[in-house]
Image (cartoon, rainbow, N blue to C red; front, side, top):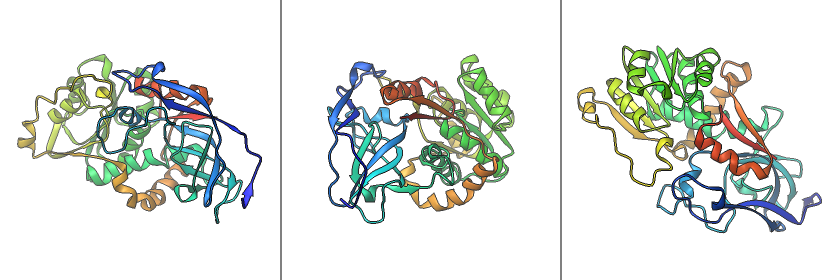
Length: 340
């Protein structure tokens, strides 16, 4: 071993023990104590400091075929994490380095060094590499600018707008010259945050009345871009307000993730014929080529305070599951982070 600190022998990690039906239940998961393996050649050991929980993880708990492999039953789950290297058998990685990786849901992670990306806690807080400067930030950037082909002067509607992705979409649109940005959220407090802190032109609580009516009131001249994190009635409302040659980027559909039966589609899809509207799905993994451009442009906005962000922090590995369930309920404002 080229570089090491004293390691524990036991590691706490979350396992999926049964596949959830509908809303995930605590009994579908288990926090177990497992032996911590020693690193092999070219491997490192990382003490995780911050873990990410995200809506897409719900899909990985199902056995259904999807764009990413499902979690294995009886095995530790995965997710974004940042931590400190505490042992290294790899050239170029030293004890004390901080890295971003995808072996969360555990206290310590042992993996090949090539699967880690070094990050600098002096440049930005470590948690930002899981959110505003990480995967969620790139999702917002690529989805708005590439998938939705945003143009200066566009009117933009964002659902789930107080979440990690949605809040960044709206702010980037404003910074890029949107004529109007509208957001939906699930509480009056979040609506206030969107307008007063994030600079949205209008926002509404989707629980306060029909989404289609509230959107028409907030965007009387229609919308050119819809960034969808919710699906369901939000997607139908957006199609109803879409202007000529409008674009819809489908990032997520959190409203249907726990459904046990297929959700009905929008009843007004025929309107896309008249508007010549376009709907396109979005996976951040298709857009990692934009990462350098994203960091160059968004990093200074974050540093200057032009682009604001919130984090909801839950303490302790034992609360990792509850933090994830909270994301599905919409408990978080901005990025949900578990700090160990």
